[in-house]
Length: 175
Image 1 (tube, rainbow, N blue to C red):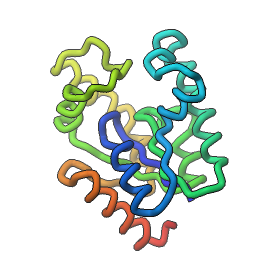
Image 2: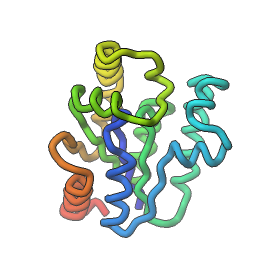
Image 3: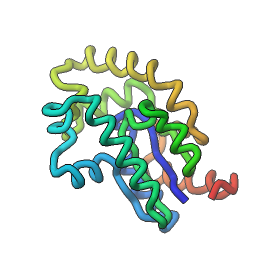
């Protein structure tokens, strides 16, 4: 079984994914880390030197590759993974998709404090960041909302969110 965590950047997909994998005794893959390892370049370098279109193609190929793995996995997808190449439909066919929904203010705060270099945010001020998030969330919500499970992540810590997702998945007999 594969469980895909989707949502905007800084929504906690990687942190919660690790917790969820531990709770379910699954293996864990962060798709961005997987891509960086496969290509011996950071996501920033792929964006900077090859462009977003190239990155999205590589991301789609990586998603398909990890779906072929035989073991049970929690997969933290990149913020845009579900929005390109019909990836959300592919993920829905190949496992359980969980959208970690967060408020814009929470995302802004997390992204401002983040130490991760995110190519799509280069050079944005706090206000520009909030406007960017609003615009991109509006574009992506039609993909994010196709997830089989939507979880509001604002008021729970990662361990609590992982336990909530685990309980819902087990209760709904999705595993």
